[in-house]
Length: 364
Image 1 (cartoon, rainbow, N blue to C red):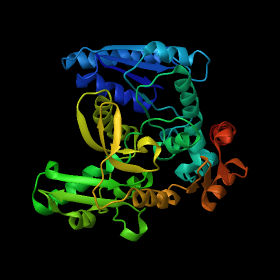
Image 2 (cartoon, helix red, strand yellow):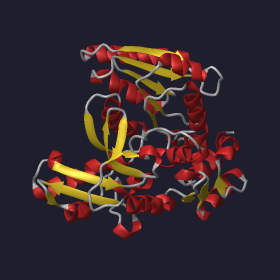
Image 3 (cartoon, rainbow, N blue to C red):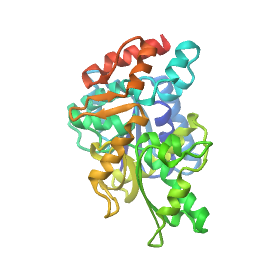
């Protein structure tokens, strides 16, 4: 029996619920959130959809607020085999829908400017998880390239994130396949990349190599190094819609990751922040473990340095050893334009207040 727990029932976990319910891997799926009315309806829908496709996992909703003292006990009672948490106080798609002058200032803010809105609820998840005493793997899906690193540098953190770098790797296979006539599945890809690169890979216009965030890429076809072909095609135009359905890509990544973490086979894939490292890496996932699976010629130091060098494209200057992040000057100015407050850095202790200031400025 395998029991999956999804914490926070937003758009992403709604897609992950539907995908995992139909996969026939987990015998029980529990969704935990603060809105029973919506949660019960959505779990009923997932149960029906899975049954249409011939799968009958037990699916139920549990009311859970990770900010409440009862959260640890509820997590302990659920006793999941694997957990994915994806809370956010202001997800990206809501920012895209803001209107008026505040909406314009909000959309002008680099992605990392919203870090406090992702970090604050993940700190609450971390606290409840630690208090619960659970030792099974859990995944942090809220801006994991940075949030999970902060969590690990300030205490226990999730085993890894999901999506982001894994959503880029297929384009490498498509490019090599188009150039050589092979099947995309025949191309083995190893990629080190931070969250910001995805926006340059899936654009309507080609990005010159020197303008994209740093990354490390190796592609092999039948044991032959075809990285040069991959590099030539990687940043060519390949537009996709940045709408709510974008979460389907992350759900597909979760559909590989979560079963492997629960002990259902082994998989080579890419994940953000494996064991708290900044950015994304190629890994092997099996039996509740995530281990780096990089080419022999690559060093961990070079991989970390590449991802750290990519941070300014998201709006961050650095992540300090104590978990404090330093914003770029452009991000600090954009934060002031929106909130009329000066924010040059963010530590875990200031996350809640900064998140409140951002939300007040953006939506009142």
